[in-house]
Image 1: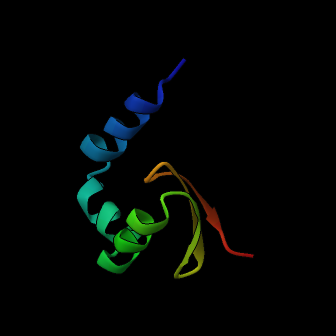
Image 2: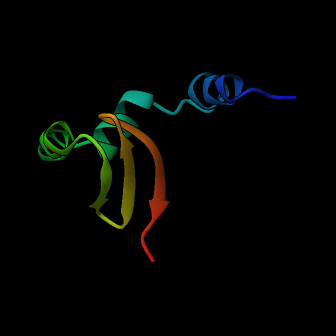
Length: 64
């Protein structure tokens, strides 16, 4: 009943979470260069792993 878009707007507008800050936390300049070089794959970063397809981060997993 609740779309992902609505959840995101709730976090942003009601809870006051800054999405730009989250993007910076996830994607460093160095990691962006790696993604642009390889295009797809799994990239580890500070306790979590990014799954990338066609130069886009599609999900995040916690490192075990």
